[in-house]
Length: 383
Ligand code: SF4
Image 1 (cartoon, rainbow, N blue to C red):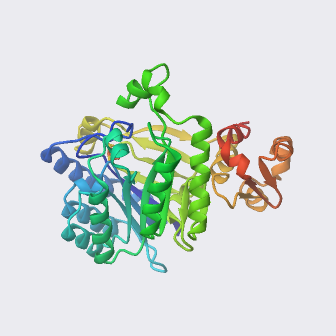
Image 2 (cartoon, rainbow, N blue to C red):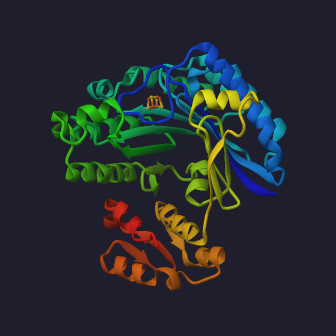
Protein backbone atom coordinates (compact mmCIF):
# COMPACT_ATOMS: atom_id res chain seq x y z
CA UNK A 1 0.00 0.00 0.00
CA UNK A 2 1.27 3.46 -0.86
CA UNK A 3 1.46 6.17 1.80
CA UNK A 4 -1.10 8.99 1.66
CA UNK A 5 -1.56 12.26 3.51
CA UNK A 6 -4.98 13.86 3.74
CA UNK A 7 -5.76 17.55 3.94
CA UNK A 8 -9.25 18.75 4.94
CA UNK A 9 -10.04 22.40 4.28
CA UNK A 10 -12.50 24.24 6.52
CA UNK A 11 -12.77 27.74 5.04
CA UNK A 12 -14.54 29.58 7.85
CA UNK A 13 -13.22 32.23 10.25
CA UNK A 14 -14.88 34.40 12.90
CA UNK A 15 -13.52 37.47 11.16
CA UNK A 16 -11.21 38.07 8.20
CA UNK A 17 -7.71 39.16 9.23
CA UNK A 18 -6.53 42.23 7.36
CA UNK A 19 -3.52 40.56 5.69
CA UNK A 20 -5.17 37.29 4.78
CA UNK A 21 -5.63 36.07 1.23
CA UNK A 22 -6.39 32.46 2.16
CA UNK A 23 -9.58 30.86 1.02
CA UNK A 24 -11.53 31.75 4.15
CA UNK A 25 -14.43 33.93 5.28
CA UNK A 26 -17.01 34.24 8.04
CA UNK A 27 -20.22 32.32 7.32
CA UNK A 28 -23.61 31.64 8.83
CA UNK A 29 -24.26 28.50 10.82
CA UNK A 30 -26.53 27.06 8.11
CA UNK A 31 -23.80 27.40 5.47
CA UNK A 32 -21.21 25.81 7.75
CA UNK A 33 -23.55 22.92 8.42
CA UNK A 34 -24.16 22.38 4.72
CA UNK A 35 -20.45 22.55 4.01
CA UNK A 36 -19.59 19.95 6.64
CA UNK A 37 -22.20 17.62 5.09
CA UNK A 38 -20.71 18.26 1.65
CA UNK A 39 -17.29 17.29 3.00
CA UNK A 40 -18.65 13.94 4.15
CA UNK A 41 -20.20 13.40 0.72
CA UNK A 42 -16.87 14.21 -0.94
CA UNK A 43 -15.06 11.67 1.23
CA UNK A 44 -17.65 9.04 0.28
CA UNK A 45 -17.37 9.88 -3.39
CA UNK A 46 -13.57 10.10 -3.64
CA UNK A 47 -12.37 7.37 -1.29
CA UNK A 48 -12.64 4.52 -3.86
CA UNK A 49 -9.83 6.19 -5.85
CA UNK A 50 -7.48 5.66 -2.91
CA UNK A 51 -7.88 1.90 -2.41
CA UNK A 52 -4.14 1.32 -2.87
CA UNK A 53 -3.23 3.85 -0.21
CA UNK A 54 -2.73 3.88 3.53
CA UNK A 55 -3.20 7.12 5.43
CA UNK A 56 -0.18 8.30 7.43
CA UNK A 57 -1.12 11.90 8.28
CA UNK A 58 -4.23 14.09 8.38
CA UNK A 59 -4.22 17.88 8.53
CA UNK A 60 -7.41 19.84 9.18
CA UNK A 61 -6.65 23.39 8.11
CA UNK A 62 -8.38 26.55 7.09
CA UNK A 63 -9.68 29.06 7.71
CA UNK A 64 -10.16 28.37 11.36
CA UNK A 65 -11.37 24.77 11.77
CA UNK A 66 -11.92 25.44 15.47
CA UNK A 67 -14.77 27.84 14.52
CA UNK A 68 -16.79 24.78 13.60
CA UNK A 69 -18.52 22.61 16.20
CA UNK A 70 -16.23 19.80 17.26
CA UNK A 71 -18.96 17.20 16.65
CA UNK A 72 -18.85 18.06 12.94
CA UNK A 73 -15.04 17.75 12.90
CA UNK A 74 -15.39 14.42 14.74
CA UNK A 75 -17.82 13.19 12.07
CA UNK A 76 -15.31 14.03 9.33
CA UNK A 77 -12.60 12.06 11.13
CA UNK A 78 -14.91 9.08 11.71
CA UNK A 79 -15.87 9.09 8.03
CA UNK A 80 -12.22 9.22 7.04
CA UNK A 81 -11.47 6.23 9.22
CA UNK A 82 -14.43 4.36 7.76
CA UNK A 83 -13.64 5.07 4.12
CA UNK A 84 -9.82 5.03 4.06
CA UNK A 85 -7.27 2.46 5.22
CA UNK A 86 -5.08 3.87 7.96
CA UNK A 87 -1.54 2.73 8.54
CA UNK A 88 -1.71 0.68 11.76
CA UNK A 89 2.04 0.36 12.20
CA UNK A 90 2.47 3.87 13.59
CA UNK A 91 0.29 6.49 15.17
CA UNK A 92 -1.32 8.68 12.51
CA UNK A 93 -0.36 12.33 12.94
CA UNK A 94 -3.67 14.20 13.03
CA UNK A 95 -3.37 17.99 13.24
CA UNK A 96 -6.01 20.65 13.57
CA UNK A 97 -5.43 24.39 13.22
CA UNK A 98 -7.00 26.41 15.99
CA UNK A 99 -7.14 30.06 16.86
CA UNK A 100 -6.90 31.38 20.41
CA UNK A 101 -10.28 32.15 21.86
CA UNK A 102 -12.15 29.66 19.66
CA UNK A 103 -11.73 26.53 21.78
CA UNK A 104 -13.15 25.57 25.14
CA UNK A 105 -11.82 22.94 27.52
CA UNK A 106 -14.56 20.61 26.32
CA UNK A 107 -13.79 21.20 22.65
CA UNK A 108 -10.14 20.34 23.22
CA UNK A 109 -11.12 17.18 25.11
CA UNK A 110 -13.43 16.17 22.27
CA UNK A 111 -10.64 16.74 19.74
CA UNK A 112 -8.46 14.33 21.65
CA UNK A 113 -11.23 11.78 21.90
CA UNK A 114 -11.66 12.05 18.12
CA UNK A 115 -8.00 11.10 17.65
CA UNK A 116 -6.48 14.55 17.05
CA UNK A 117 -2.96 14.50 18.49
CA UNK A 118 -1.38 17.70 17.18
CA UNK A 119 -2.52 21.32 17.47
CA UNK A 120 -1.36 24.21 15.37
CA UNK A 121 -2.17 27.50 17.07
CA UNK A 122 -2.24 30.73 15.09
CA UNK A 123 -0.69 33.32 17.37
CA UNK A 124 1.34 35.41 14.86
CA UNK A 125 2.57 37.90 17.48
CA UNK A 126 2.63 38.33 21.25
CA UNK A 127 2.53 42.10 20.90
CA UNK A 128 -0.82 43.78 21.54
CA UNK A 129 -0.32 46.56 18.97
CA UNK A 130 0.86 44.12 16.28
CA UNK A 131 -2.12 41.83 16.84
CA UNK A 132 -4.37 44.84 16.40
CA UNK A 133 -2.63 45.90 13.18
CA UNK A 134 -3.08 42.36 11.82
CA UNK A 135 -6.79 42.40 12.67
CA UNK A 136 -6.51 39.28 14.80
CA UNK A 137 -9.47 38.50 17.05
CA UNK A 138 -7.43 37.46 20.08
CA UNK A 139 -5.00 38.80 22.66
CA UNK A 140 -1.84 37.24 24.09
CA UNK A 141 -3.85 36.30 27.20
CA UNK A 142 -6.44 34.48 25.05
CA UNK A 143 -3.61 32.57 23.46
CA UNK A 144 -2.04 31.72 26.79
CA UNK A 145 -5.31 30.39 28.12
CA UNK A 146 -5.79 28.23 25.01
CA UNK A 147 -2.20 26.94 25.15
CA UNK A 148 -2.37 26.05 28.84
CA UNK A 149 -5.74 24.39 28.46
CA UNK A 150 -4.35 22.35 25.55
CA UNK A 151 -1.47 21.15 27.73
CA UNK A 152 -3.85 20.29 30.56
CA UNK A 153 -5.99 18.34 28.12
CA UNK A 154 -2.94 16.25 27.26
CA UNK A 155 -1.73 17.62 23.92
CA UNK A 156 1.98 16.83 23.67
CA UNK A 157 2.60 18.07 20.14
CA UNK A 158 1.82 21.75 19.62
CA UNK A 159 2.88 24.14 16.90
CA UNK A 160 2.72 27.91 17.23
CA UNK A 161 2.53 30.07 14.10
CA UNK A 162 4.41 33.37 14.14
CA UNK A 163 4.92 36.14 11.64
CA UNK A 164 7.74 38.62 11.16
CA UNK A 165 8.21 41.77 9.03
CA UNK A 166 4.91 43.22 10.26
CA UNK A 167 4.12 46.93 9.89
CA UNK A 168 5.71 48.78 12.80
CA UNK A 169 7.42 45.64 14.09
CA UNK A 170 10.95 46.09 15.39
CA UNK A 171 13.73 43.62 16.00
CA UNK A 172 13.13 44.13 19.74
CA UNK A 173 9.37 43.52 19.60
CA UNK A 174 9.90 40.42 17.47
CA UNK A 175 12.56 39.13 19.87
CA UNK A 176 10.12 39.68 22.74
CA UNK A 177 7.49 37.59 20.94
CA UNK A 178 10.01 34.81 20.36
CA UNK A 179 11.09 34.84 24.02
CA UNK A 180 7.54 34.65 25.32
CA UNK A 181 6.74 31.77 22.98
CA UNK A 182 9.95 29.84 23.66
CA UNK A 183 9.30 30.08 27.39
CA UNK A 184 6.22 27.92 26.83
CA UNK A 185 8.33 25.20 25.17
CA UNK A 186 6.04 24.23 22.29
CA UNK A 187 7.31 21.29 20.25
CA UNK A 188 7.18 23.20 16.98
CA UNK A 189 7.32 26.81 15.80
CA UNK A 190 6.55 28.09 12.29
CA UNK A 191 7.82 31.58 11.54
CA UNK A 192 7.01 33.15 8.20
CA UNK A 193 7.59 36.67 6.89
CA UNK A 194 4.50 38.69 6.09
CA UNK A 195 3.74 38.96 2.40
CA UNK A 196 1.51 41.93 1.55
CA UNK A 197 -0.86 40.28 -0.91
CA UNK A 198 -2.83 42.13 -3.54
CA UNK A 199 -6.57 42.22 -2.89
CA UNK A 200 -6.22 42.43 0.91
CA UNK A 201 -6.85 45.53 3.08
CA UNK A 202 -3.13 45.31 3.88
CA UNK A 203 -2.29 45.92 0.24
CA UNK A 204 -4.26 49.17 0.26
CA UNK A 205 -2.57 50.25 3.49
CA UNK A 206 0.99 48.99 3.07
CA UNK A 207 1.32 48.00 -0.59
CA UNK A 208 3.67 49.64 -3.10
CA UNK A 209 3.25 53.40 -3.35
CA UNK A 210 1.13 53.77 -0.19
CA UNK A 211 2.01 55.95 2.78
CA UNK A 212 1.99 52.90 4.99
CA UNK A 213 4.72 51.19 2.98
CA UNK A 214 7.30 53.05 5.08
CA UNK A 215 6.02 51.22 8.16
CA UNK A 216 7.14 47.86 6.81
CA UNK A 217 10.59 46.73 7.95
CA UNK A 218 13.25 47.09 5.24
CA UNK A 219 14.56 44.01 3.45
CA UNK A 220 17.64 44.17 5.64
CA UNK A 221 15.55 44.29 8.84
CA UNK A 222 13.38 41.48 7.53
CA UNK A 223 16.46 39.33 6.96
CA UNK A 224 17.74 40.19 10.42
CA UNK A 225 14.46 39.03 11.98
CA UNK A 226 14.67 35.78 10.04
CA UNK A 227 18.21 35.23 11.27
CA UNK A 228 17.19 36.16 14.79
CA UNK A 229 14.55 33.41 14.71
CA UNK A 230 17.19 30.83 13.89
CA UNK A 231 19.70 32.11 16.46
CA UNK A 232 17.29 32.34 19.38
CA UNK A 233 15.46 29.11 18.65
CA UNK A 234 18.69 27.16 18.22
CA UNK A 235 19.81 28.32 21.68
CA UNK A 236 16.61 26.80 23.07
CA UNK A 237 17.12 23.45 21.36
CA UNK A 238 14.95 23.92 18.27
CA UNK A 239 16.24 22.57 15.01
CA UNK A 240 15.51 24.45 11.85
CA UNK A 241 14.46 21.66 9.50
CA UNK A 242 12.83 23.82 6.84
CA UNK A 243 13.37 27.44 5.85
CA UNK A 244 10.51 28.65 8.09
CA UNK A 245 9.94 25.69 10.41
CA UNK A 246 11.61 24.69 13.67
CA UNK A 247 11.06 21.76 15.96
CA UNK A 248 12.33 19.90 18.98
CA UNK A 249 13.91 16.55 18.07
CA UNK A 250 11.33 14.17 16.63
CA UNK A 251 8.60 16.78 16.21
CA UNK A 252 9.02 17.91 12.60
CA UNK A 253 5.57 18.11 11.03
CA UNK A 254 5.21 14.78 9.23
CA UNK A 255 2.33 16.08 7.14
CA UNK A 256 4.20 19.07 5.74
CA UNK A 257 7.27 16.91 5.08
CA UNK A 258 5.13 15.04 2.57
CA UNK A 259 4.57 18.26 0.60
CA UNK A 260 8.26 19.13 0.53
CA UNK A 261 9.25 15.60 -0.41
CA UNK A 262 6.61 15.34 -3.13
CA UNK A 263 4.67 12.51 -1.54
CA UNK A 264 1.07 11.77 -2.50
CA UNK A 265 -1.68 13.71 -0.75
CA UNK A 266 -5.40 14.11 -1.17
CA UNK A 267 -7.14 17.39 -0.37
CA UNK A 268 -10.85 17.59 0.39
CA UNK A 269 -13.00 20.66 0.74
CA UNK A 270 -13.13 24.04 -0.93
CA UNK A 271 -10.08 24.77 -3.09
CA UNK A 272 -8.14 21.88 -1.56
CA UNK A 273 -5.14 20.76 -3.59
CA UNK A 274 -4.11 17.16 -4.25
CA UNK A 275 -1.20 15.37 -5.80
CA UNK A 276 -1.04 11.70 -6.70
CA UNK A 277 0.73 9.77 -9.43
CA UNK A 278 2.56 12.94 -10.50
CA UNK A 279 -0.70 14.73 -11.23
CA UNK A 280 -1.79 17.87 -9.41
CA UNK A 281 -5.34 19.13 -9.15
CA UNK A 282 -7.49 21.24 -6.90
CA UNK A 283 -11.13 21.63 -6.04
CA UNK A 284 -13.14 24.64 -7.16
CA UNK A 285 -12.67 27.78 -5.07
CA UNK A 286 -16.25 29.02 -5.28
CA UNK A 287 -18.31 27.92 -2.27
CA UNK A 288 -21.59 27.84 -4.21
CA UNK A 289 -20.04 25.65 -6.93
CA UNK A 290 -18.52 23.33 -4.37
CA UNK A 291 -21.78 22.89 -2.46
CA UNK A 292 -23.92 22.34 -5.54
CA UNK A 293 -21.23 20.08 -7.00
CA UNK A 294 -21.44 17.89 -3.95
CA UNK A 295 -25.21 17.88 -4.13
CA UNK A 296 -24.81 16.46 -7.63
CA UNK A 297 -26.25 19.47 -9.43
CA UNK A 298 -23.02 20.40 -11.08
CA UNK A 299 -20.49 18.21 -12.80
CA UNK A 300 -16.97 17.90 -11.41
CA UNK A 301 -15.73 19.94 -8.48
CA UNK A 302 -12.15 19.52 -9.60
CA UNK A 303 -10.26 22.03 -11.67
CA UNK A 304 -6.70 22.89 -12.63
CA UNK A 305 -5.71 19.30 -13.33
CA UNK A 306 -2.07 19.22 -14.32
CA UNK A 307 -0.16 16.10 -15.32
CA UNK A 308 3.43 17.02 -14.54
CA UNK A 309 6.02 16.70 -17.26
CA UNK A 310 9.45 15.27 -16.47
CA UNK A 311 10.88 18.79 -16.43
CA UNK A 312 8.24 20.03 -14.00
CA UNK A 313 8.84 17.07 -11.72
CA UNK A 314 12.57 17.79 -11.63
CA UNK A 315 12.00 21.48 -10.93
CA UNK A 316 9.61 20.67 -8.10
CA UNK A 317 11.97 18.09 -6.70
CA UNK A 318 14.64 20.76 -6.46
CA UNK A 319 12.78 23.78 -5.18
CA UNK A 320 10.62 21.89 -2.71
CA UNK A 321 13.50 19.70 -1.51
CA UNK A 322 15.83 22.65 -1.08
CA UNK A 323 13.42 24.21 1.40
CA UNK A 324 14.51 21.43 3.75
CA UNK A 325 17.77 21.94 5.59
CA UNK A 326 18.78 18.35 4.81
CA UNK A 327 18.55 19.38 1.14
CA UNK A 328 18.13 16.96 -1.74
CA UNK A 329 20.26 13.89 -2.14
CA UNK A 330 22.00 13.00 -5.40
CA UNK A 331 20.97 9.40 -4.79
CA UNK A 332 17.26 10.28 -4.47
CA UNK A 333 17.42 12.33 -7.66
CA UNK A 334 18.94 9.36 -9.52
CA UNK A 335 16.30 7.04 -8.09
CA UNK A 336 13.46 9.37 -9.05
CA UNK A 337 14.61 10.32 -12.55
CA UNK A 338 17.10 7.57 -13.57
CA UNK A 339 19.78 10.10 -14.39
CA UNK A 340 22.54 11.93 -12.65
CA UNK A 341 21.67 15.33 -11.22
CA UNK A 342 24.79 16.82 -12.85
CA UNK A 343 23.49 15.85 -16.27
CA UNK A 344 20.51 18.15 -15.68
CA UNK A 345 21.72 20.80 -13.25
CA UNK A 346 25.54 20.53 -13.35
CA UNK A 347 26.11 24.14 -14.49
CA UNK A 348 23.57 25.57 -12.06
CA UNK A 349 25.06 23.65 -9.14
CA UNK A 350 28.61 24.77 -9.95
CA UNK A 351 27.56 28.41 -10.27
CA UNK A 352 25.50 28.41 -7.05
CA UNK A 353 28.35 26.72 -5.20
CA UNK A 354 30.79 29.37 -6.43
CA UNK A 355 28.36 32.03 -5.23
CA UNK A 356 28.36 30.28 -1.82
CA UNK A 357 24.59 29.78 -2.01
CA UNK A 358 24.59 25.99 -1.78
CA UNK A 359 26.65 23.15 -0.36
CA UNK A 360 27.18 20.76 -3.22
CA UNK A 361 28.13 17.33 -1.87
CA UNK A 362 26.24 14.03 -1.74
CA UNK A 363 23.36 16.15 -0.61
CA UNK A 364 22.73 19.60 -2.00
CA UNK A 365 21.55 22.12 0.56
CA UNK A 366 21.21 25.87 0.98
CA UNK A 367 23.91 27.77 2.89
CA UNK A 368 22.78 30.48 5.37
CA UNK A 369 23.35 33.02 2.58
CA UNK A 370 21.35 30.80 0.21
CA UNK A 371 18.48 30.78 2.73
CA UNK A 372 18.56 34.59 2.82
CA UNK A 373 17.96 34.81 -0.90
CA UNK A 374 16.24 31.47 -1.39
CA UNK A 375 13.76 32.82 -3.97
CA UNK A 376 16.66 33.65 -6.26
CA UNK A 377 18.27 30.24 -5.71
CA UNK A 378 15.02 28.35 -6.41
CA UNK A 379 14.51 30.25 -9.66
CA UNK A 380 17.82 28.90 -10.98
CA UNK A 381 16.33 25.41 -11.06
CA UNK A 382 13.60 26.30 -13.54
CA UNK A 383 14.64 24.59 -16.72
S1 SF4 B 1 -7.64 33.29 11.02
FE1 SF4 B 1 -6.17 32.63 9.44
S2 SF4 B 1 -7.42 31.98 7.70
FE2 SF4 B 1 -8.75 33.17 9.07
S3 SF4 B 1 -8.71 35.22 8.25
FE3 SF4 B 1 -7.12 35.12 9.84
S4 SF4 B 1 -5.24 34.52 8.76
FE4 SF4 B 1 -6.97 34.13 7.37
